[in-house]
Amino acid sequence: MDDPTPRDTAESDLEELKRQLEDKQDRLLRALAETDKGYLSPYFVTDPERQEAVLEDPYVLIANQKVSAVHDLIPVLDNFGRALAAARAAGQSGTVLSGIELIQRELQRVLEKAGVTRYSAVGERFDPTRHEAIARVVSAEAAPDTVVNETAAGYLLNGRVLRPAMVAVAAAPDEDAA
Image 1 (cartoon, rainbow, N blue to C red):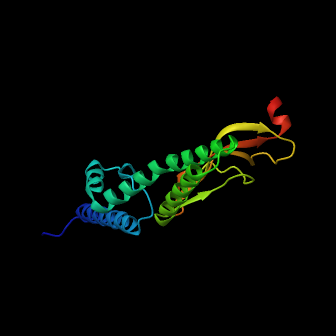
Image 2: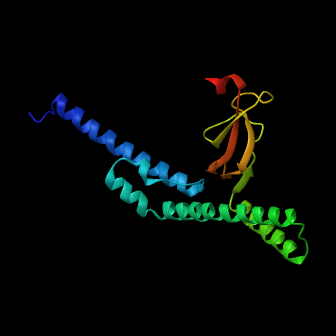
Image 3: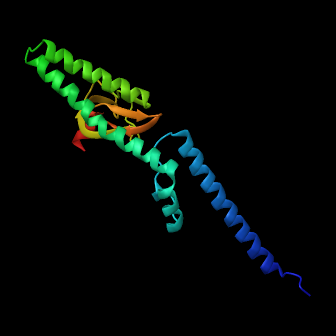
């Protein structure tokens, strides 16, 4: 009379399904890391033991280090652009300006090789996944919720937002009265 009861069978089936789910989750995380498509956060994993395993996975560590390094270079690229704009506005020219332009282009090439692309948001409909609204501008010319100005360009890493574009969004004149 060693026949398992229906409850024992259900519990063993549940345990097997849990094991299969954990295995699939692990394989998915590894596949994402191998494709090197961006930041893999251990915080998406709810089980503390699995979080630790994800943090220690060499694929995840490499992917996260790459994203972190690339993310840290974006403000440097922005500052090169600001320096060039200020120098041109002051009427400066010459070899120093040419040298700064050369360094900026080289940094852009390095980032492009790493999978970084710059995007502009002006004229697009506001998308909170790609744009960070820093101002609202009353405009009769632009459709409401359209990006009318860009303070900082957005950047993608392998098609995923690395830094959203910082934008001003149009609002209808009557919206401001409300």
